Amino acid sequence: MLEINRIRTEADAVLKGLEKRNIDAKQTVDQILDKDAQWRLQKTELESIAAELNQIAKEVGDLFKQGKKDEAENAKNKTADLKASEAGLKLKVEELETEIQTLLYTLPNVPNEQVKAGKSELDNETVAEAGEEPKFTFEPLPHWEITKKFNLIDFELGVKITGAGFPVYRGKGAKLQRALIQFFLDEAEKAGYEEFIPPLVVNEASGIGTGQLPDKEGQMYHCTVDDLYLIPTAEVPLTNIYRDVLLPNDQFSIKMCGYTPCFRREAGSYGKDVRGLNRLHQFDKVEIVRLETPENTEKALEEMVNHVKSLLEKLGLQYRILRLCGGDTGFASSMTYDFEVYSAAQKKWLEVSSVSRFDTFQSNRLKLRYKTADKKTQLAHTLNGSALALPRIVAALLENFQTENGVQMPEVLHSYLGFSKID
Image 1 (cartoon, rainbow, N blue to C red):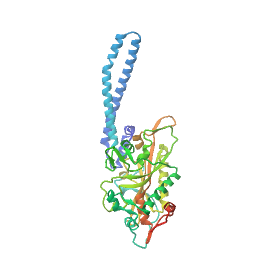
Image 2 (tube, rainbow, N blue to C red):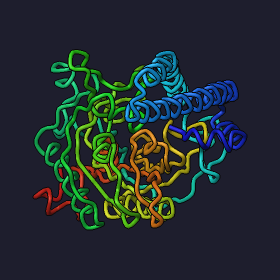
Image 3 (tube, rainbow, N blue to C red):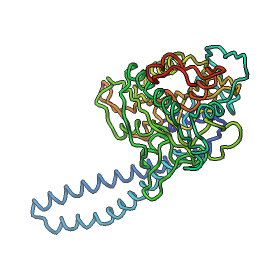
Image 4 (tube, helix red, strand yellow):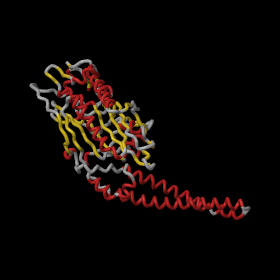
């Protein structure tokens, strides 16, 4: 959520920044500023009445001490109208606060100055590319045929048990999942991230805290009876560990990681681009989350990007890094780098990670603050990234490392798998 003070003091800059997302937010910003002006006026009047009531209470006490009972009672009677006005003003102030917050919830984060304007993924910038496209002496199979050939993943069984987008991993397919999860967690630990195993369902406050709620696109699975939500990523429970927390000083750099299944409705997904592992309703992911001071955010983002790069390089996968344009950047993010790996059989790039900085957008919702060296209270910065999401990594490994008689596994996974080849 954007800070109200930022809108008060930098309204034009906020509007210009949101134009990168192809959003004309002038009407909303004007409404916020108008209601904020009303709120400040009512708040001042409320504080004035409170001060007057305090003064009268002091006078009444003094009069009683002096034995002037009648004068004291007359003074007390004056407070009745003031208290009625105070109650009405309190109600109005609360209503305005709710209205302002509701409007603020509709505004996405302002893109970082490095983010270019653009309408869609076609306008994203490629900032790095590494690795070589695999060469084959035969026609490579797409991963959904490889998984069927070697009995690794049963998509049809998943449909029977649950529905489309819920695959069943079996045999070496299940072992490959576990190997990748453990490899990613081990690498995160080496990089200084503390591992958590968080809940897979969260309450509404947690969803609001990280920007998934209000859920305008209907992507979250909602357990209506208990009013709980299945997590779309470990980012939500991990970041909410620090909801309503005041860190005691500015000497922190908090690094968390966690493996969880993730659940996304992906409403409207259909067609060849969602075949096999390309788009699922349930998938596994290792997430990394960081809490930083504003001064360290840029460095932290670079470190996270380099961490994901190292994972892909150790797996031997061809990849590229994109800096998303304004129109393709997520609602809560101020800047996002997407990692894509090349799918040799499908002959296209598959997104496997997003690494984002949110600045104060999430921490403002979370009320996540810290004390500066001069004892002032300031909002922390939050960042997160996939390190990594498994489905398309598995798809790329199977497709890119296939041979005529099996699939050769990356050497870094051999000790985790207990085998070097799927055949």
